[in-house]
Image (cartoon, rainbow, N blue to C red; front, side, top):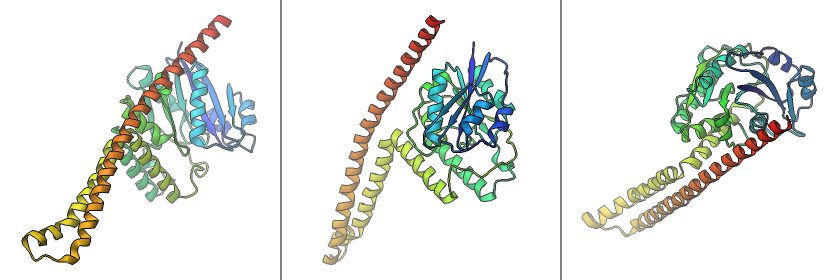
Length: 324
């Protein structure tokens, strides 16, 4: 009996949450049970109380604000413990059209995908400025490159996961889960699909970032950090190689003058700089080798964590069956 849990991370969403909940489906083809889970990220406007008054099945409340990534991760863990076979994440500002949850879940039910992400078709969103659309397109292109995926809208929070995909997810970023989860899933060779979805009229500005510059900095840092975690040898080899090539380039004029021209003692400084660059480049490559060994160890740790999660949830399921 497939069970779907729709999770909604919230931060001071008492005004928009009722409309968001009212837009969610009560039944879906291929799904026997649909439940709602609200994660209140330390709201001060009574969001949790509004959620309970609206009949939300499960409410998880943080005592203080911990950030979107923490709320998303806590929701995934809670949904798994509640026995979800499929998990859909949506935003509390009613940005995404709830009727298209059926589109998100369909490829999962068909066994075609592990993760499905809603494509908002950024070009058609009227309230988004042209430079934001440009940055979104460039950012999505960059994520596709580093993750080896074909997701057109990588910052979309409207996404669905199978139980297996959710079990394998480990989010380490404190900023946002959107980019990290795609890069992580791509590196793990998960089947990631996307479907076109509609968006509702704009209700409020984004609360994820204070300025576009800050968002670009934090998103860029997240992409670099996560990609380096998964491909450390490649990253450090590129950096070390560039340093070594720079060292060779700096030494070339001195070597040329020494062997084929008139020797100039004043150029000895370039030879010293060249030696430093080559040595540092070699050391960076060695750091890459160490980081690669750490990365392999991390993969083993993630596999152990995945197995522990499965064992814990299987044990919880057996207890529920024995109690009933």
